Structure formats: structure tokens, C-alpha cells
Image (cartoon, rainbow, N blue to C red; front, side, top):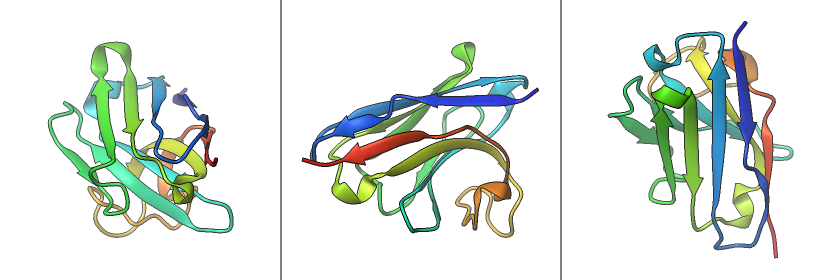
Length: 130
């Protein structure tokens, strides 16, 4: 069965960096668009980034553009999110996901909830605090 497992979250000071990983199994990872999304306390789900199957095209939300970088290693069935210049407002649970099922643009989706994705991981907590 499809499994997505995120890791790499933790506590980091403002201005710091973290790299999240998402290990995929149970499907042909190299043929799917993949996404990073996050949910901050008391807020809705926010799309952060998309990457095409080959990794040659990447897209970012304005809130993270220039600070976050998505990549993938199809040989390792793994997607990454390098997060730099972290801010307190980046505190959230971060999820990787595949197949956007919601309405609208699937390259820059506007999800209303995790159920808008066919599959997603359990999430990894990122806390940015001094």
C-alpha cells in the first residue's frame, strides 16, 4: 500500500535551517507529482511546494519562495524540503502528499484539507522559536 513517511522536523531558532525528508513506498514514485503542505495551529492547510516527476520543475507558495527548496531523488524514492531562514510563522506540522483531488490548479493547488490529497504522510512537527 502507499506509504509516505516524513522526517527531519524539530525545534530550530529563527533564522535557522532544517531539511525535511519524505520517503515513499507502495507506488512508482518517479511517475508522480509530489507536494509539501503544512498546517499551523488554528489555521488551514497551506500548500508550500510542488515538484514534477523528474524533479526538473518546482513551484512555491509566495510565503516560502526564496527560502525553501524542494528536490527529489527518484533512485531513493525520497523527496526533500530544504528550509532556510526559518521564521516563527513557519511553525506547523509539515506533510508530504501525492495526487491532488481538489478543485482547481493541481500544480499550485489550494487545498482545503488533507483529504484533498489521495495520500499523505503522518506529518513532522517544525517549531521555530528562540
